[in-house]
Image (cartoon, rainbow, N blue to C red; front, top):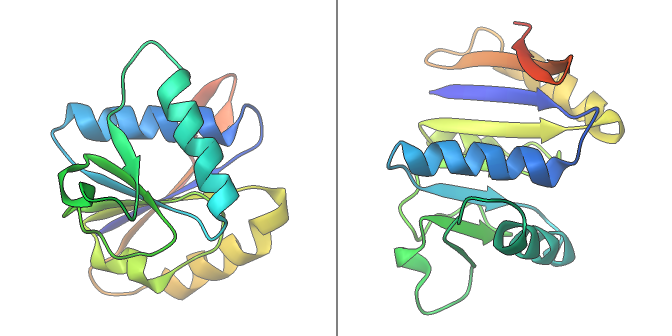
Length: 144
């Protein structure tokens, strides 16, 4: 299983989330996007509908069609859409991320200490590959 740590510095988290979601969909995958705050998820929902040239089919968890959603936004790490990819959008690490094939962990300066702790906790854990990404010159660069 792979965990990609993305340090947000420039640009909005919504743009990064849309970019990752687009790549997962292009690879015929499904994605669960989680955040604790329902207002945050509502903003992400609006951004995914309005933000960009690519249509990203998705829904907010709790609907009748959750299982059919390629991208599902939720406060819970459970994936009724059978996603094998999880994106943590609020910078709060969840151990449930390790039950997915690939997880994307977005963090910023406010959640940096939690990201550092998660990085250390995953060090040497069998079956877990960690990758750390940061923006340089407008591009994502793998740092570790």
